Amino acid sequence: MTKRFPYIVLAAAFGLAASAAYYSVFGLSKLFASQATAVIILASTLEISKLITASYLHRYWSEITKLMRVYLTTAVIILMAITSMGIYGFLASSYQDTAYRLQNLETVVANQETKRDRFQTQLDAVTREKQAVDKNVMQLTSALSNNQNRYVDAKGNQIVKTDAGNRKAYEKQLDISTQRLQELTKRETALSDSVTAIDLKITDLQTTSTVASEVGPLKYIAKITGKSMDTVVNWLIIMLILVFDPLAIILLISANKALQNKQSVVNAVNDQITDAVTITQPVYKQQEQPNPPQILSYWNKIRNEREKNKK
Image (cartoon, rainbow, N blue to C red):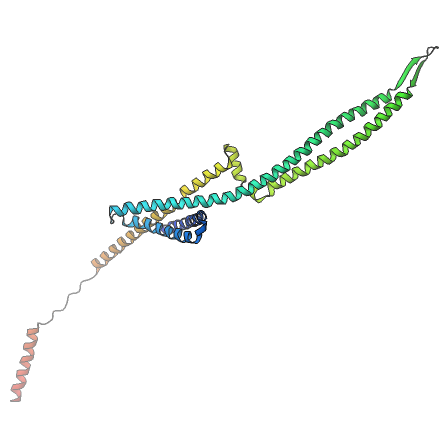
């Protein structure tokens, strides 16, 4: 795992840098929509150059001139700022699309709530009238039951007699009030059903809508912080760009450093192995070879002896 860790860091750096480059390139292309293709090519080239420049500065910092160090460092910082601006533009544009859909949803919900409030106002009025009519019916019923004249005759007997005129008046009023009560009951039921249906529709819009689920966490954060949702999103985007591209550059430099340290260790081990092999290698004594003058003398002697024998 230790041997592979530098490559894991390098892969993380390239992955993060690629993501940052993607958001930055398309964010800048939206800022300059009329020349989107040209901006994509330009921004992609600058992103690659930024990574190469950061690696170059780390590897050859002590070998380049001060002027080059200042310029290349400034260029990397400016490119990081451009990348962050592109990321901000991309994320802000994405949020605006969601915000527009949320605004449309809130408009629909507000219209439904206004309609529900009108029905609720009518329902409250009908309920109050119904209560008054119901009370009147109870009073008429009681009056009709008590519509009796009590008196004592000459013999001292208590006589109870119903007042026919009052009874007819009470019955007529009771019929009118009962009919009105029935009408109000039907209207109250219809209005109550309308209010309930609108409440269900509002609940359905707020819970099943895609945009509602997307901005749900943001609305919760905005609620607990007491800030508007636009402010919360702005904070979130700023936090993302502060750790996005700078972290990619730091990881790239760290991967370069880890790979350099690894190579230094490998070279040191190889040097130790070479020294050990050189020390333990046996030294073989070379055989002594006859000098060239001695060889010539030997062949001259043999040739002289042959000439003597021929004579």
